[in-house]
Amino acid sequence: MIIPISFILALLADTIAWQYAPNFSLLVLIYWCMVRPQAVGIGVAFGLGLLQDSLSGVLLGQHAFGFVIIAYLSHQLSPRIRLFPIWQQTLSILMLLTLEQLLYLWIMALTYQPPDTLLYWMPSITGTVLWPILFLLLQQLHHPSKL
Amino acid sequence: MSIKSDLFIPKSASLPQLLMAMLMAIALMVLDYRMQAVDSVHSILATVTYPLQWAVHLPRTIENWSHYQFAKPHQIIQENLQLQQENLLLLAKLQKMEALERDNHHLRQLLQSSARINNSVQVAELLTISTDPYKRQIVLNKGKQDGVFKGQPVLDAYGVMGQITRVNSLTSTAILITDRGHSLPVRINRNGLRSIVVGTGTQLAIPHLPNNADVKVGDLLVSSGLGGVFPPSYPVAVINAVKQDPSQSFAYITATPKAQIDTSWKLLLVESKHDNPH
Image 1 (tube, each protein chain N blue to C red):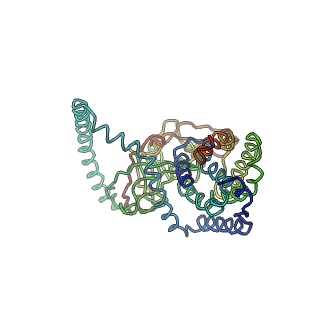
Image 2: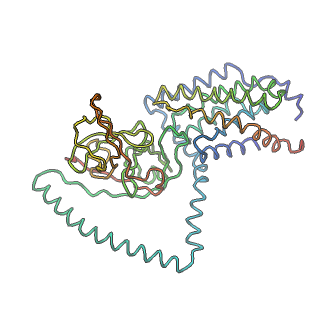
Image 3: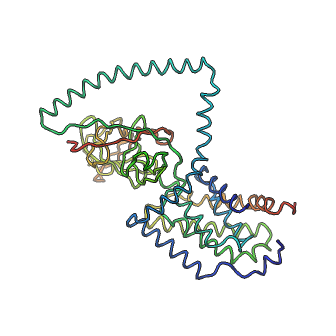
């Protein structure tokens, strides 16, 4: 139950958030792909990506394309990443977020003019900074007993 | 759920699955980009995301509602008086306007050119703006059910805002004139010089006017009606900079939109049915 609710809240946050705010849906997607790989996989990532495409008014599949790749990589990384200390985990998250933005940038460059500022990469950085907080928060909600 | 069961389950995401999903995403993008063939998928998704957009809009709805529920009577009376005064002024202006319109119609008949038909409008409210900061798009709370159509001009109280690009059953998406992919035929109100303004992301630019063109800072640009999308003579923008560099063949001209692109949330959809504008 917590999984769909967290996705809905993340989409809501993305809808109202500031231009340099992290991509909340992507962060939540990575979390569930690592923690509950049997429940959240490529299909969920694809659907979530399509919803974000619709909300942000870009081409259908523009977010979905990156999301499925990140979901796959998160699955691959999940057994290792969960043993990492949190700072090391955060570095892997930076890599994943940057990769998603790179894929998105390629699509932008192919379809309409790409952004001309380096501030484009801000969401990856803010996302990385936010990751430990989000991770602990979701973990608390997921396993309140582990407090 | 124990960590052990988590660690030793077989991988649920397989490579063929990933490749399938990637192919599907690429196919969707190509279909959407090249031929707008996936409009039905768009409207299904728009219906799914409508509650989200509605939820985002909720605080404003509540604020509006509570303004009238909890306002003190004297506030409402004052507001009412103010509105009455404003209405009187506007009505006086409209009287003049009607006389001018009749004149104009008459003169046009004499010149045997087609007359402009009065444009009727409907009011729409902004639901959300695009979450992609590099696209200037908005979502409005009027859709197919209200008779919105693709290409319909969107105005606010001050000038042209944009045009409808996609119509769903309950909502519609509009591209703003400041989007980099949008251009709009205009003429300069002072001397009738025709040109095209394109969006730059934050403001507007006129890319193809020669260095010796008669353009001044402060000139008002109005829609020329030539594209057939926007009705003629609506204010669009005011020129804010003209740089003439002799080494370049075109002048560098930028303009600020008249419409309050970032703050307006009550918008007008124009039922534009004009034939030949000139």
